[in-house]
Length: 139
Image 1: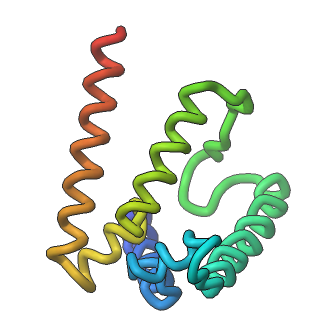
Image 2: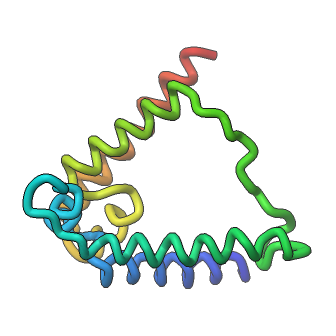
């Protein structure tokens, strides 16, 4: 129950922050990504704020004996750069540039503009399913 409530509160706070920051507006995101055209730098402040919060959290985690809402920390263990990582990052960036949304803001946008966001979210879920099927075929 406690973990569910924490998830609900933090998810709601995250979605509200994305909406207030303009990350759920595809036109604004594309304007931010258009660095050689009519660039809109406003989202740089949103991203800068996120980087500051994450930098503080990254410094605090090693000093904590245990996480607040879990039994142990689950920190990244891989540090290698693989072709799959570069390919995934490229696909993510291309999709972000075309749609003006990425997963978090896309889901948050379902509340604000359900019809447009639903197209993105369905496409995202189909893409995730295709990757899982492809990975399953390799095994």
